[in-house]
Image (cartoon, rainbow, N blue to C red; front, side, top):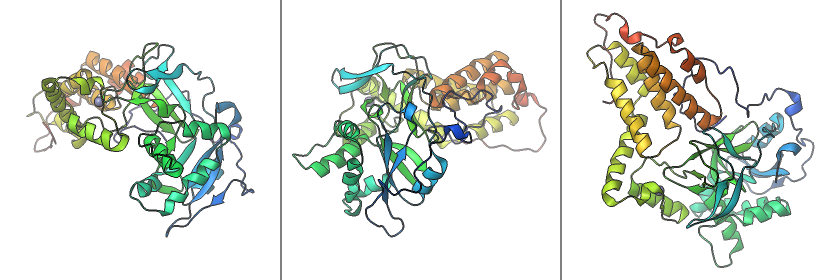
Length: 414
Ligand SMILES: [Zn+2]
């Protein structure tokens, strides 16, 4: 399980070459036996109506933990049983640390690469220090007292080094000496979503010692993702990052306009963003807002069904889809966006060029889809094969089929 991959992504070919981080959980050598028979390290804390939260510790494989002996996890529902049943697989131990955490101008501490990173290459992969349901954070934020008792014992379960790393993370709302409140504020400043864990439907968040040092940009150069099998977070370059450059991810939905982005960052993280997109002149910023709002149309429409409707509706202009998605691609370039949205755009263009039997266009955009896919997940998702032979896709020549009398098609957004 990884994020973020658009839900509508459907590769035409199977992925013949799994990415380096893909691990077969069924292979017993990868399993780490969890102490099912031991209640050591498990603290019952409190009860809610539905679930009993517990603090438990998830062992991670010896060879793959630069800092962590165990991940402390506040668990609800059957999460503990599920994690114990599956074990945790090691991640690719071949990944060397090619970055340093250092002072960066204007932003305090940041993460800077010490070697060039090509798009798709892993910059950081690490186990979290602490994992907690989003609900608990939200409840604390809303002033509901019950879960407030959870974080202090959870931090006590960290070893000295991990506790030092946790306490050393940035706190965007420091208090004057309220230690418990400061722990919560560190958690709220740094927690990153990891989606659901088996055994509980709600969302979970994680805090990492290194990934949480990465600063925000509305035009980031890296993508954060989560791999459940190895219980690790990872950050990959989404475009070329040169030696000495700082790494940025986005903390928010960065397709929103300037005002919305600033408000969200200010409310949640207490800072004013001065990234390249936020440092434009007022006139330029307005143009940027229009471009980003055009991009968010992609999510409000259904790109796949639009392209499919166009394939068979000969009343629609021949270049409709290609013109529209090339415009989106142009906006992505202008806004310096390099996220998973590229997959959706490139996929639509591959479909359209294939439907028109235009092999060069199909190949070019399949390569782009492959690049974006590698950046998002480390997996090719079959795009290399499509780039090699787009004629083999199901989309090939569909726009060239004879018109079907009486058939109607709908298109969601022009
Ligand atoms: Zn910004």
